[in-house]
Amino acid sequence: MLELDLADPACPGLLLDPARSRIGHGVEDGHSFDAEIEQDMVLHGYNRLGDASTARRRLTLVFSPLLLEPDNELRTLGLVGSVDQLRDFGRQGFLVLSAMIDEDVLVELDSEVDRLITRKPPPADKVGFHHYFEHPTDLPVADRALRLSGVQSLAEQLIAPLAIDLAFDHIQVATSIYGWDHEPGGGHIDGYGTPGQTEPRTFTMLAAIYLGDETEAGRGNLWVWPGSHLGHERLFRERGVDILMSEESMGGHACLLDPAPDFGDGQPVLANRGDVLLAHHLLAHNQSGNMWNPMRRIIYYRLAATGHKERWADTHTNALLEYAPVRAAL
Ligand SMILES: [Fe+2]
Image 1 (cartoon, rainbow, N blue to C red):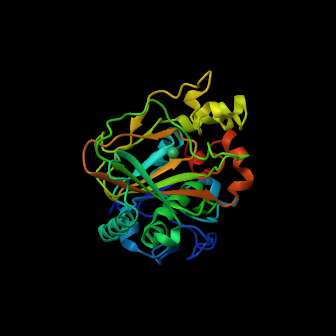
Image 2: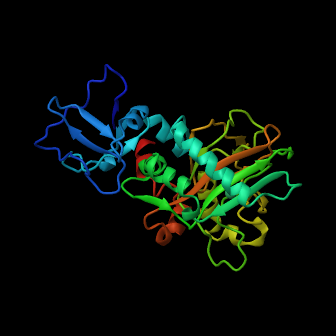
Image 3: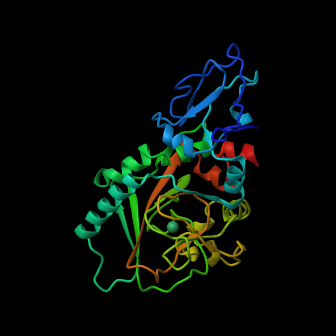
């Protein structure tokens, strides 16, 4: 594993032999980062839009051995985030990346969510969770934020060389209305509980853009059970990939099975406005109450790696199957 901190002025860069390294813009279509060697042979990373300010914020380029050709030529690039972050994701099943979305984009997102809520207000006496699942064409700012503000590229950096995009025809705006004092006792995974379904609606990764301050619990935070993506992997290996299809799980809650697997204690995800959450599809999670502000709002994207539909069952028994860079970092 080679690692560079491009933000460190002392970073010497990576010395490469251009005769042996095929590096240039658009090394492989669909990857988040291109690379080039300047005359001084220092490697520079750029995001797909060439937005240097975004690139500067993401401090480290990591080159996975899996992405190297056998003759050690760099076939492709694309990982951003420290090796520790990749390891954290592999072990915990989620990652919060701080201050990834620019304030001007967040303001546009606020307005789009305001318009949605005005158009489809929640019932007057509603407290607690109230969700919107909207076609991406009806949330153009959120769709653009996924593609142009780095969320899609961040997600792809965990699953390279696969590409990632929306798994379904919706973007979710999740709200939590003041007055529901609740901490969940167990979690679920998405994709279960639809009447008549013959297989789960699985995907690869949940991504979120935070619009509010959720740096403390009790603010409508998403709750997660760290490491439970691997707990689910064990469950599916031992009891079959259809184990959560039964009514017993009430829509993907392994904690309701008898016997129930032990996923340990849950915890609220703490994050701030502009942060991005990436979470493994098999991470047990749930919603909690908001006793802090009138309405907590967050944007969720369910993302699937290219070809996920054909391999979904294998991703249940091999949780990191689609996450080659994460596997390489562990
Ligand atoms: Fe869920």
